[in-house]
Length: 493
Image 1: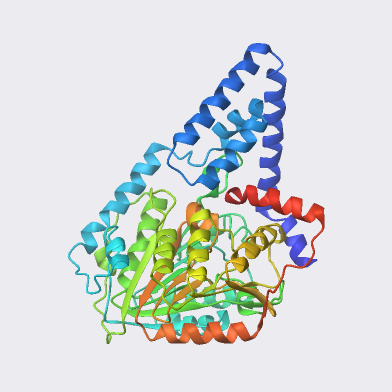
Image 2: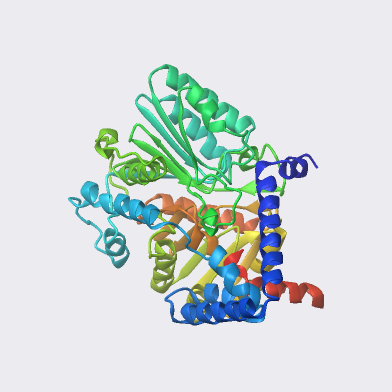
């Protein structure tokens, strides 16, 4: 009840209510002026032009259908509504600034060689995300483990701390971190924080100013506006911590008491992350500073944050960041590549399983080819409507021979894929349309690191606590109809 009340009184709920009111007013206005014959004809023509444009446009078919179907059903409203709420209504100046910042990464990475030389590393090298050695990785199998390790490293900071999170929620976890940060600022440590304005909406209004009063530089990413704009969907879903250029963290865990099981809104919260020490931290520094430049609109020299901190080799590590403002779906492409490379097993944990036809086909093909495909999803959903869509993908995967499990103690939030116990991806990207197409994400690609063994052990242990889905059980006709409708619009959820 307390959580529900906090959600209803949050800034997000207020803005969503105002946006809903705005949508209703727009529809009423369109309905009114469409009664005049020539306006009605104009709206029909607009809808036809948009449908033709979308058919010829190079874009994900599922996304196109999610718009084409309602436009054809409601041609008077559909076309105009699309123009207001289209996928990428971001100004050219914003896109140009982002593109220039993205291209600038070349200046800081082009001199690095590629010691791995695989197709995946060459693909990421093409976007100036280099392959590293002289790096140690430590897999952290819970939010609690990550939190304890993070506090020790934050306490050891001497020069600077960078933090970037989708969610920062008030509570014990944030209180302890904030107290450490305040102490470090007093000792002359530079602290920069980026938090997503939507994800962190439980923070007090203008919380940025409060942090600045403590001496902490802060940015609330993509502030929510009270006007209809699809760019509001572009959320900063990344989780990055960098300490002195030597150590970095990423993974599924945000900052909130549920992530370390001090609160249990959805049963036991199972998360995972990774600690990185050595050369590969450089890419996480670049990823953070790129977003800082993009949001603050201030140029900066990354080199002043560079650290020559090498450790022993432990496989190959490629941290990279993904963005909806570039014409490339890096996370999705690498998932597809790894699935195609698999010879023995594909192990996946994801809180959501809302995938497009390409990923579905790849997983089904792998399973039918004799590769063991095992996927763990939550038992207790955090978003029931979204979970209904996740459920709809399970029977198709099961028919192909894939094994899907539900984490019985509660909610699994870790996002990772392990291939043949040799390669892996771990980071912030879920297997859903939002992460693969709309969110700013960051991921770590691993090849031959010792941490992969720990990831496999984590998966096997989690599997023992999970329930194998033998059948979906009988669902009522209304439930199945709603599920079908939701799946049809899954790319917009």
